[in-house]
Image (cartoon, rainbow, N blue to C red):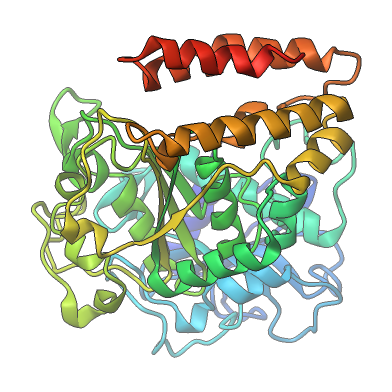
Length: 491
C-alpha cells in the first residue's frame, strides 16, 4: 500500500479552496469506503478523510469511524478514533480505547509543537487520538514529521492498518474473507483481551490470589518492583503477567509493555539516550527503549506502560539508568523534580525531563548467581522487592496432572523429592535458601500425554538439575553426586 491517497488529501487541503474529489481517491480501502471533505460549506469545517462501513450519505458512519483530520491552522494531521458530533453511535470503540486514548479537544503534542485545547473549531472534539503527524509540502511531494523527526511512510501505513483492525473488531466486520484484503495483508491483531489476577492463576501460577493481589498492590504503590528468587521460580514469567494485569489486557503488539534484558555490555546510551550509528553511516542521537516508552506514556496519560527488565543485576543498573535513577522514584514523578539528561532528545530538545505517573518498572533478579554483584543501596531503595520461592504445592501438582497430563504418582514423587532436596540445600551453610531448585524446571511446557512421565523427569535431572547441583557444590562433588542419586534412586 502507498500513501498517494493521503498525500493527495494533504495537497488539496493546503490549497484552501473547494476541491473536486470524484475519481481522485480509491472508492474503498481495506474493504471500507473512503469519503473526503475539505470543510468548505460541508458538514464539517475540518478537512477529513474517513473510512466507513457504508456508502450511504445518511448512514455512512453509524456514529464512529477511523478518520484523518487535518487541522490546517496548526499544520497537524491527526489519525483519530472518530466519533460523530451529530449521530449517536449504534456501536462504538471498545472501553479500553475510550478510557485510555486522549480526546482531541484535550490533546497536547508531547513534542510541544501544538495543542488543540484552545482551538476555535471544536468539530470532532470528542474523537480520540490514535496518532498525529506534521505534514509538509516538499516540491510535489508530501513528507510527514513528528517534532523534528521525519516519519516513514511504512510507519503511517502500519498505523492505518492497526486502527482499521480495531474498527473492524469493534464493528463485527471481521470475517475470513475480510480480514486480509487483497491490497494489504492484515496480520496484526488489535483484539483487547482483558487480563486480571485470575488469568495469572489460570495460566499456571501457583501463588494464591491473595498473594498476587498483595504483589500487584505493592507494584502500583511503589511503581518500581523487583521479583527475586532462586532459579526456576518463574520470575520472568510472572513479571510479564503482572505487567498485563497493570495495563488491564494482553498486549499482543507490545504497545504498552516493553521487555529488555540487562547484560554487562548494556550502556546508558543503549537504554536511555545517546549517539548511535545511523543508516547514513553517521552517528545520530537516538532514544533508547526506556525513553521511547517514556514518550508513549506522556502521550497517553490515561494508559499504563510497563518496562520489564530481565536479569536486572546482570548489568550495572546505576550506570545504565544514570541520572534517571533519581527520577524513577515514585515521589519524584512530577515536573517540579524534572532534570536535564546527558543528551538532548532525537528532536534536539534539551529541556528537563521527568517520568510520568503511568510508567512502571518491573525487574527480575537471580539471587543464586555468584558471578553477579549486589546492586547498590541507592538503586535498591527505589524498588520494592518480592521474594519468590519454589512452589511444589498442591496447586503445582493439580496443574501438572490436570493440564499437562503428568502421571499422578510421578507428580507426587517429584513433589516429595524436590521438597526434600530444597530442605537439604537450605540447611547447607555454604548455600542456603537462595540456591533452592525452582518448580519451573518440573513444570512441562507441553502436554506429557502419550509420553512416559518418568523418562521425562530423568531427562530433566540429567540435562538441567545435575549441572546446576554440580555448580552449587563445585567444591564438594560428593554432595552433588549424593543429591543427584537421591533424585532418581527410588524410581
